[in-house]
Length: 73
Length: 220
Image 1 (cartoon, one colour):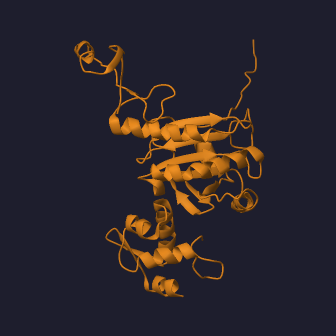
Image 2 (cartoon, chains in turn brown, blue):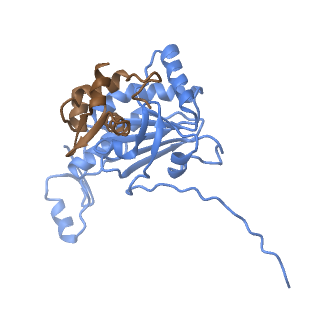
Image 3 (cartoon, chains in turn green, brown):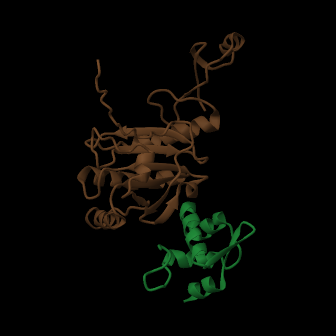
């Protein structure tokens, strides 16, 4: 899982992405605020949704409670 | 007279075709698992190389890394591929950075099961039964395959031609024109030939630089 290190902590890019979805944002908005390519945002958001770090609401993405805790840790 | 008909089973590799949707995929890369649809809205240059830790491929990766900023300006992403493991890719790109001083900014697919290579016709058994040839697939923001280049194992690709091809395709899309041989940005472009006799008669009066009714150029 590229977003999560073997010890359970987040990679720097995953932390940046989670920080960008503390309020609802589209992948395009996350790409703009993080400076990461859109394909990486789409790929990472998919993985973070699968691990319960991010949820979708009406086409936008938002960090879950676990995601917020991880982004601060 | 009785006789036996020899039966022969031949494996026919699928080949993608220009103007059709590029084969979809999900693949493990050096930057995580990506799908073709993740690149929607961007131009994608999907390219294969025969193997990691080989000299011609190393020069090509350096070349692709060098044109990466120019591609980014054009809204295009790079995605490499070979039949190597992700650990091998990571070790190689780290080696290229350490020994050659070039950071590889794009992801590289680890296509160990050859699924992507097979769906794109990247393995040419006459060249190598185990390695991918030097293929380039240019996929537009709608996921349509717009151009293909195939080079043999022995010949490194020309990065300026890849940039030129992207420029030509984007110019065609934007201005509805064609581009002549050896065209480069700033050169005159080809006005699409008329397809009725009436249009052909008008064409010579439209102010283009014409050799004849079917062969007119204009500056953009």
